[in-house]
Image (tube, rainbow, N blue to C red):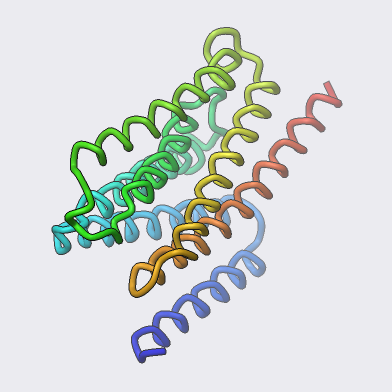
Length: 228
């Protein structure tokens, strides 16, 4: 492991411990909400800039990094919507919320980036095929969203069914991304193997955390329904 890698790993460990300590020690209330929302915005903004910077520097695989950057930008917009409602308006997000669609699509851009298989030699890759792959992935997941979630979200609002279906489809979407990243990482060598494994670990951790959060929110909504 190089010095820069050791330094980066140490930074991640320190940041994780610092965030955990802050969440544990800070009193529950508005201050915790400010800390959590602004930290998420900061980290997603940094990731967006980093991916876009890679797209500028690496022309051969520019589309790959641009798609990852686009996904992080969409993710940042969703977090900004959360922060706007919780920190400025001081109220919960409305249901349905446009941020749900944005959050769902950001995973699609990650899938499309991996589907490009940027580790392949440049001669084996065709721009037209890359565009077709992207639109096929996008249309497929939008179709699933329209079929599973949209009717109870915008046709006839049923918050309980809509939330349940959205959480389930979002979980499946994340699991597919993790599975694909694992397959590609296991079959690749060199520097791209490290990139894919890093994306795999990050996506897996996010999927677990997202599922835990959604389960907690769902339990809270179920308790509210039982008290009505």
